[in-house]
Amino acid sequence: DLLLSNSCIPFLGSAEGLDFRTLLLDEERGRLLVGAKDHIFQLNLVDVNKNVKKIYWPAAKEKVELCKLAGKDAHTECANFIRVLQPYNRTHVYVCGTGAFHPLCGYIELG
Image (cartoon, rainbow, N blue to C red):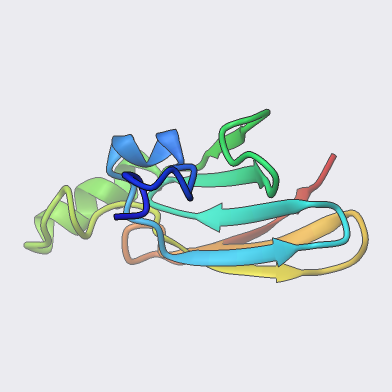
């Protein structure tokens, strides 16, 4: 209904089937950070498809192989699902992902 009424703008990156998991709204800078499967997106709040920035952050190949050997599904479980997006300071965000059942965290500099 929203699409038919032209009252929303769909995010075109969602066509990749990225399994969105977490959001961090930064109203002060007019952006939205989105954690997904193997990706972190930075979207513009005015137009989510304008100047999209994307970080590809997959789990290490050896961790994915270990995950598959443990009987997990390669497409739905053996990836780096971003679960934490937390402001750290004015320039960085603390980010954590599942890392194919081997969690990993880091800091992203926002620019």
